[in-house]
Amino acid sequence: MRYSELHRDMERLAEKTSPPRKLGHKVTDLDNPTNISPLDASKAVRLLRTANAQFIMDIIEGELKFGTAPVRTAFFGLAHTNLSADLDQMVGFINVANYANNSNLLMAEWGSIRNLRFLLSSVGSVSIGASSLGQDVYNIFIPGQESYDMVDLDGYSAQFIYAPPEIASPRLRLYQTAGWKMAQVFNTTNTSWIVNLRCTLAVAI
Image (cartoon, rainbow, N blue to C red; front, side):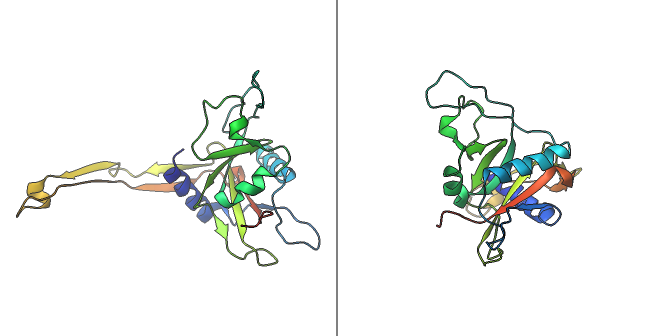
């Protein structure tokens, strides 16, 4: 998954799925939500599996390589890069450098905890000052397989448009232009297969 695709999907999920299904770690007399924990990951996965959502990534089996570990079948968690330090300090978190096999590793992937593999982007979703104590709340979108899709509009698929110098710059023919355009509609197929896990930062920026 390229960063441009990750950015696009995060924006669409923020628009479509934030209101109906949210998960936050609540602790009495503390901020709400609080920082992410391994239990939060398990709860999100349980919610999706109870709704019969299918995992996206297959298991990575263990191998005889020192310092590596197997990775469970997993959903993706789409999140902001500011969460990287919080993820690193979680008990049980496996960084991508410690995967037993990295043949299916994605460019944006940071690591995994239990049945979640995290894809981080600097344009991840953040709700500014949205916690009970006024801290920024980070939205971690966790979609199941086929929970959303892109619908191409009839007659408006991807078009490559090239204009030679005699058209783009007819007087002096100094330059040419090239570009593309297309039209798509974002569609949520099943809101029960998408969870928004919300948290604040434990490790200050």
